[in-house]
Amino acid sequence: MAQYTYKVLLETNTGFVLDTDVLDTGVLGYVLQDVSSYVRSIRATRGKSTLQGKFTAGQMTVVFDNRSRAFDPKYTSSPFYGSIVPRRRIVFQITNNADSRTYTQFNGWVDDWNLSYDISGDSTSTAQCSDIFTILSNQNVSLTAPTAELSGDRMRRVLSSSSVALSPEYYGLYPGVFTMGTASYSGNALDYLQNVADSEAGFLFVTAGGLLKFMDWNALVSPVVSPDLPFSSTPGTAAFPIHGLEVQYGTEELVNNVTITSAAGTVTAQDTTSQQTYRIASESYPVLTSNLTQMTTLANFYITNYGNPRYRVSQLTLSLDDPRVQDVNKGFIGLSVLLPIDVGNTCSVTWTPNNIGTAITQTAFIIGLDIDATPESCTFTYSIAGEDTRSLI
Image (tube, rainbow, N blue to C red; front, top):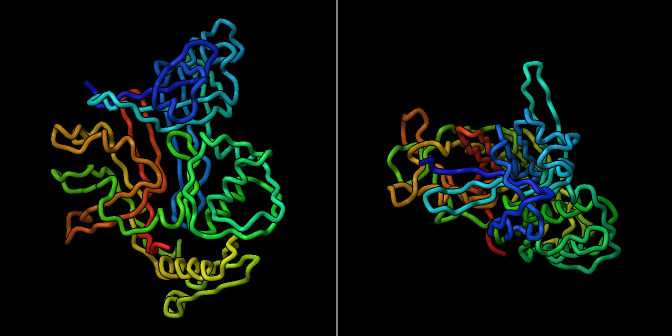
């Protein structure tokens, strides 16, 4: 028996799938039908590749077998006629067959249907999908002299505004630590929400279940003593096997001259030793923070973490088809641990380059996840943040 089974659910005009994982994501009331038997391949991408970068909209591409014209919006005899239209809900799930638990890996909407026909008679219909970030990126918000408040409260103000009106079932926010100022704003809602998150070096992203999530400064304090997901290149260890690993060591994240600006003023920080060694690398961060002490904390954070080139694991890959990825009762920690892991979880990576020298271990946050699946295989590729140094506030 295979270790896992994947499933694609599409919002259609017929059929109903009652699944607790789907209901937990706020999909209750939608008509979701299992269309997995038509799937040829799935690629789902979420997160970002560097700690300083912004989280982008999650994307998923699902290629369906369309030889029967089942996914042709103009074919009136299709069992899904009337449902092959943009903005239909689509959900990708994987079930651990060892314990029959199902875990959502992507929850979003179809943006486009692209049909391809070959002279041989083959035909595919490709659903291009995205998550709730795409919805927010097409909405505007106006704030007139808002009350000074914590970042989490500021996000709630935006999300509950009449021009956004996102139901609380679609987001989960930490309270926030830094205080946002009273400057007015009129413009893109997602840009503003990301600026709020950046104002305290927080994470604003969409979870695998489709939930808009904000992790504030304190939620990201490390080092982590017990990581959620251990990886190792050493066979036989109680960790997931690494199939591929990439390391970055360079100036792509180097910042040794920092300027933090807001309506409250300007704060600067620099690392002169780094500047003498690697030349000056300046970066300016406009924030909404109204507290100069907090702005100083943020400036020092960037200098401490990025003042010198970092040797870090940037990406690693594993296959769900590896026989070592088993259930815990078979001697390995298994899919029951792997499948629920999401962006924002912690991981440890232990490897010995080319099996030469001593092992290297790093502990950090998962900041991105790509999934490539076909009926025959499934591969997970994680983007890993560098080590993050900050203290509780």
